[in-house]
Image 1 (cartoon, rainbow, N blue to C red):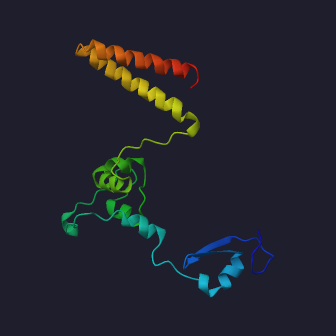
Image 2 (image 1 turned 180 degrees about the vertical axis):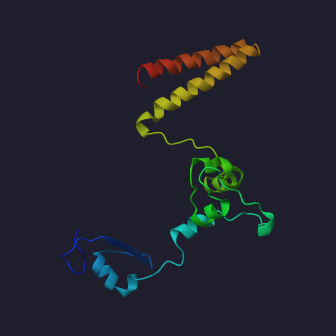
Image 3 (image 1 turned 90 degrees about the vertical axis):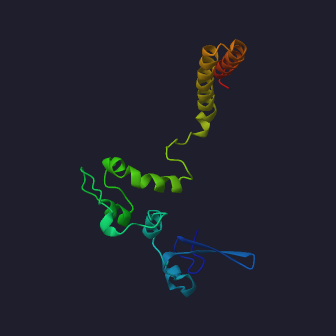
Length: 170
């Protein structure tokens, strides 16, 4: 796509404006975008400031002299440096700063502190079926342990049905 202004250079700046429910799109090259006054603006905060903003504690901070400075024994990074740059120095920092970063991770991840990963769509059904079978096997063992044999039989039948479905590729 060529720049809509000079019609020579490739458009690398794409702007969408919505004013009074009217959408306009503008596709410009870097040079033409730099010349337009309506596109020259400076963000009041940087991305780094935004990310390190998550590091500010929810509760009021203690006086600086009462907070011990944690330091990673492997890379030497201290917690104040981490708060400043928003990035840990090494894998050992996760262990050293775990009590400090757990609430941050919990806040960012919507309450979760354990990474569960993502499943590719092509593998999703098979993996979820495998997980369901594993869960049912645990339930089956529990039912057997408490001598709930009718429930155990229902669970066993469900496991067989899922395993058969899995063998057929579904």
